[in-house]
Image (tube, rainbow, N blue to C red; front, top):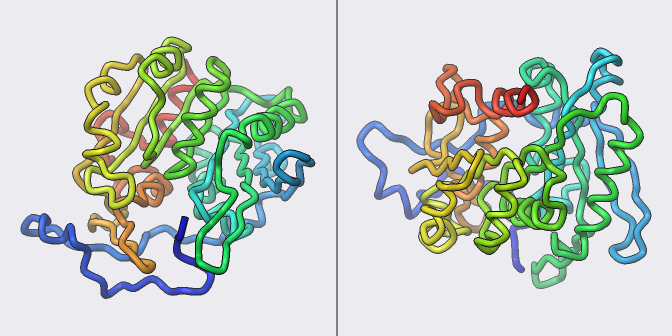
Length: 304
């Protein structure tokens, strides 16, 4: 599919989104995240996983013990799955997939420490702009193998297991939950255009996994009325599940998020708000059910 080439085009911060007509008095458009990016890349180590079926896969790992956490404690392992075309950013994918801020000293302290795993699909951009090789079922086995490898190499320090991702990564989060039902303790599918069958959802729910499903009601790409509304009642009835379906996706400054690279995707980029911990900069949580944001939710799952 044709997606913006983030390496070679700039965000248009003068664009007025079509959904702007629905903003109420006092609401404003925000064109930038308020957290600093590209400052924690050096905390991640790069590895390669040999795989004949998909080609060798790059992945990045943040090891909390290596960075000063108590070597006698256990920490959750968080796997973050990027959206389509984001692997073409190389190490920048750590930011795009939502993982970077979770390696920060602040978020690590709030979670009580955590391993972070960022695998990259073997994507390629064709001359016509289409991107091939993004997440699909063929990646399921090798990505699970990468997860297992990190856990096995740090077995004395691995606690609860999480998987999370947005857009294409949201789809692949669901794929892994289906393929390895009962393996994960927590999951955050974000802005996904795909949902499992109701039978599969029931099995996932009955496995005991804690779910945080996030999707904006003005999503420009995974349209809410098509992707979520038909299943909203079913999703709301799942055990151990928080459905976070806000009217607007915001930046930390309280502005409604606009991200325009060839086309508008600010309301699809829920991952930016997740990377802001689903909190506003003044400390107000995005949802009263998440009083301490995503980091607090992760910590609460680990304490169950």
